[in-house]
Image (cartoon, rainbow, N blue to C red; front, side, top):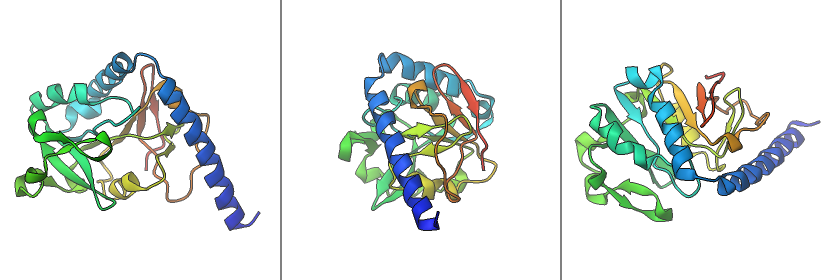
Length: 202
C-alpha cells in the first residue's frame, strides 16, 4: 500500500468513527446529569488539584457539558481559561466571571468582544498547567479525533510538555482504536462517566 493510499484509508476510517460517535453523542440520555458526573470526576483528579491555571472548553451542541462546572471552578481560586476561535486559531481568555461570556457563532459561549483585547485577559498555551480537551471520539490509549479542522491540534502542540492533556467524553464516544497519524497527539487521560483511561500522552 502506498503512503497516499494509507492516508486515504486512515481518513476514511476516521470519518466513519466520527459519524458513529456523533450519532452516539446525540443519542446520549441524561446529558446534564452524565456531564456533571464527568466534570466532577475531572475536578477530583490530582492533576486538577495541583494545577493553578486550567483550561476548560466551553461545550457546544452534544459535547460533554462543562458550563455548569465553570462557576465552581472560578470560585476555587484557580485561574480558569477558556479558548475561543479567531480566524481558525484558538485564542485563550482568563475567565473571572460567567458575566464575561456571551453566546457567539455556532451558539458557543465566548468572551465578550470588548474584553478580548484586555492585556491581563490574554494568555498563551505555555501558561496552562492543565488542558481540558474536547473531541468527537477517543480510544483507551488516549487516541483522539476531533472535527478534522485541527484547531485543538495547533493549540496542543504549543502546550507545555508537563501540562497534562485530559479529555472529557461520554462512554459512548469510546472506540476500540482511533486510527492515528504521526502528527496526532495522544491524551494523558480520557475521563468518562464510568472510567478514567490512562492514555499514552505525548
